[in-house]
Amino acid sequence: MTKTLDIKQNFLGIEKEHSSFNHSRIAIVSAPYEHTVSYGGGTAKGPQAILKASQYVELFDEETKREIYKEHGIATMAPLALAGKKDEAALQLIFDSVSELIGEQKFVVTLGGEHTISSATIAAHARKYADLSVLQFDAHSDLRTEYQDNKYSHASVMARVCEFLDPQRLVQVGIRAQCREEAEFIRDRGVHTFYAHDIRNGTHTRVLKFWDDYVADALTDNVYISFDVDAFDPSMMPATGTPEPNGLLWQETLNCIRKVARKHRIVGFDVVELAPMKDLHHPDLTTAKLVSKILNYAL
View 1 (tube, rainbow, N blue to C red):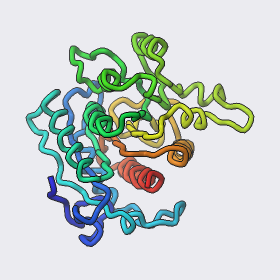
View 2 (cartoon, rainbow, N blue to C red):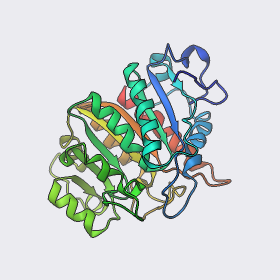
View 3 (cartoon, rainbow, N blue to C red):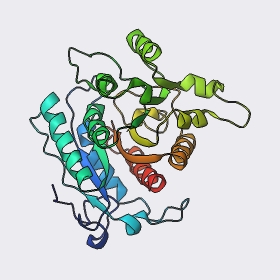
View 4 (spheres, one colour):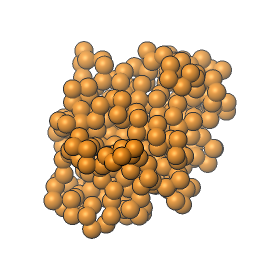
């Protein structure tokens, strides 16, 4: 799996010197999988839209004062061939591909596609990091046993993750839509869930300690981030299948990720559920910049 995209198609539009596979520490994987979406569709087009928009993201990060592509190199892999593959077959291909890149000592970023893909990418990282914890940014808990008669539904992805990962090592941020089954799972299995209404109401705020401090405290040394873009408020992220009001905003989200990166080691991440909207470019650019910002914090 060493075929990479060129400057006209790759993440950030990087010349070969800093985007070749052998000279890059970072590998961007596109997993354009869409099979179980339950409301708005279009997530299969998300990875390509992110890559296209990234060509307009500044290479210099004004906050960290870095050009991370020059420090580490960013190789953008050719999209995974997921056409015709569903459920276990699709997840196996994603797992094998990400595992191979981890074996090549790459820092892997996976672009979805629907959230289902994350169970495979997390499993690949969990195989390497025994103490792995997962930081999930999302509007939904995704802890249903199954949804619409499919246990591989995007609405069940974290239930699948909790089959191989201790639920107490799952930390959820921004949740504001769930069924009773999910609320009971969280209560009974010890999932750390930071609900949007609690964040807004100051439930986790103490003297000199804020909600994102508690998020960081709940994580282990090695952290994988799974970021569903519907974690953001629809006012800034309308381009997703199941938008929910009262979502996270840009700065508070970055503050949380930055704090986690300072206290722990981010070992990989995915960004999923972007469903591009015709003639509305800002959600694509926002998502591309999010990927760039997480890379700057993580490395």
